[in-house]
Amino acid sequence: MEEKNFFAGMNHPANAADLTDAEKKHIPVISSPGSVKSGEPFEVSVTVGSIPHVMEPAHHIQWVELYAGENFLARVAFTPGFTKASATLTITLEVAGSVTLRAVERCNIHGLWENTADITVG
Figure 1 (cartoon, rainbow, N blue to C red):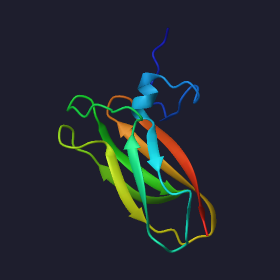
Figure 2: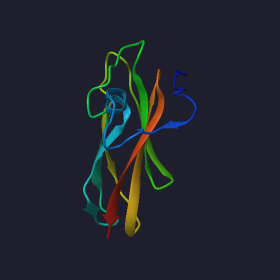
Figure 3: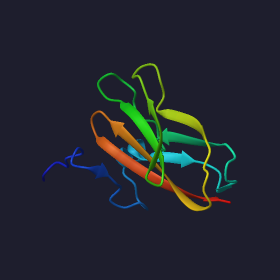
């Protein structure tokens, strides 16, 4: 059996209804309100993994980025041994309608992983 090349692109779960332990440790979890008002600040939390990912020098999450649609909002870098792969950001969206928040994270061993969450901006 050929080993998967985690650095060949963006990693996604093979079956979202039945995640492997590796997927549970790498897929970003986005916590945000379901709806917000245009122009008003709100908090978005991104935690890497529904089960904790190790943060050791040899294996760790390097960073997480947050996007609104294709618009880059922020990047948070993590230091192995000193930080948890989790961040809370305060953002403001000056739009109306449905917006897809997208979190992308990079594991130094297992590459890029992403997840999305939709919110309504009114």
